[in-house]
Figure 1 (cartoon, rainbow, N blue to C red):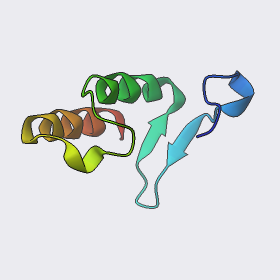
Figure 2: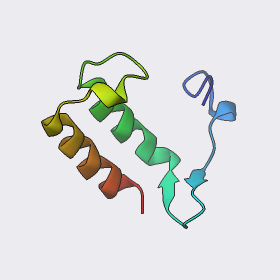
Figure 3: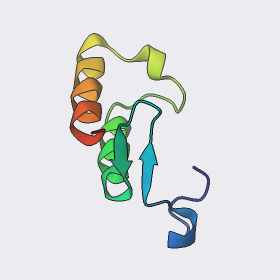
Length: 65
């Protein structure tokens, strides 16, 4: 999402996947915070360690419902 933090007008209330899972706008920051703690470059998710991937999987499962 471009400009997510610029203003509320750029935010959406929720993201919904084809399989019915939902991520609320209030949960986005949790994901951002956890992914930022990994210290990898943007777009480098494939370079996560096994421990980081496990942590990310836990955060994703907790937030996407």
